[in-house]
Length: 116
Image 1: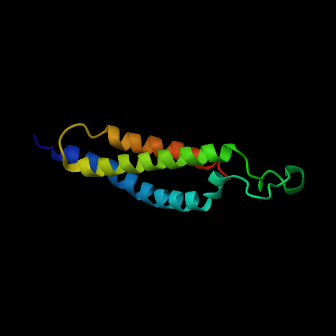
Image 2 (image 1 turned 90 degrees about the vertical axis):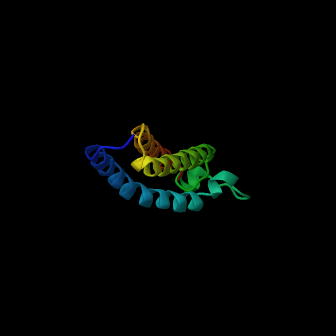
Image 3 (image 1 turned 45 degrees about the horizontal axis):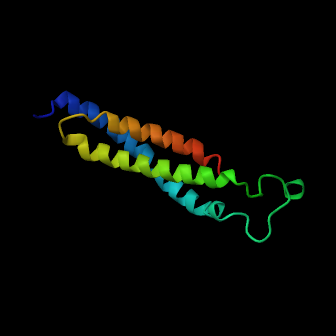
């Protein structure tokens, strides 16, 4: 089974913008997840007082949950993006992979905005 030329153009029209947007976004997430890595370990020896320091600098327990969700969803989105690029020239069902990659990347963005 071969892919028609029109189908190949449609796949490229979807995959190229998705890859152009996703790769820098995934690199940024990797950097930010490394930056927010202390959210996994807890407040450390000197927890802050929100009345004095403000909530923006205090460690909160839900930050760990959002870090784990953002990491898992970002990794899953990266895997779906790679699979969609690998299956680009193969016949068969291709459309679920870019849709899954886009949905996972959006949900990972929403989770990562809740970390700091």
